[in-house]
Image (cartoon, rainbow, N blue to C red; front, side, top):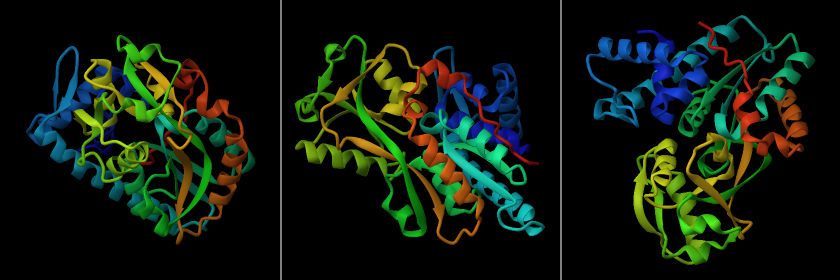
Length: 318
């Protein structure tokens, strides 16, 4: 069983899009489809239900996803331990990041770091939120760029805030709310919301519940989602409205509109996190570059086309 196929499966399970996954993995869609079929044949069960319009995890696929994340984490941790066994701290740096939130800043950050510190081997890996947190906990990466929404991570991590990502209301283009320039969250108490399922994360239901509580109402649930792609599709299919980070504009999803909210407390903090027991001095050098670049707002909120064209070398040393 090839580790590359497992990585591709995890990516596909999180975004449920062959197009997006193939782009992230730098392979064609037919090749990705062949790899998934090969994995399914080796496992002896179907991982995805797919047709011309949608991709969904099967029950077996959902179960395998949880194990696959662990497999990758252990594999990366083993590689990192082997790399470090013959090197001094600072000779290599492994950085995990969220694709939509940080894909705009990573190319320039990685290029700048390699120019300034050519003796340090930089390895970058794209994760979903849960994968990034797990990789940090398992010491599979030295540093992650993520959303600062989990107080538990702060107990054992150093945190540097890089910027803020406002929460927007995402609606179908046919929804009357799509014509609004600006809305206040309390005025949306009668709207049907697409909400995170507890199986998606124990963090995001808590985060959004806090926003609704501050706005003074309990939202009406139209649908529950278990991954980001499902949330976007529900809105795209006009099954409800959703609160989402502005960075998800980069998903370039059609038939949807993002509407600004009045409340400035409706936001995510974008942050760099690394374990307090990590002694890799290269982290400080990378953080310094990130802080300098994060002052350029366009790196977080640039045009969708520029973002989708940006590439970072994702090195998976075998």
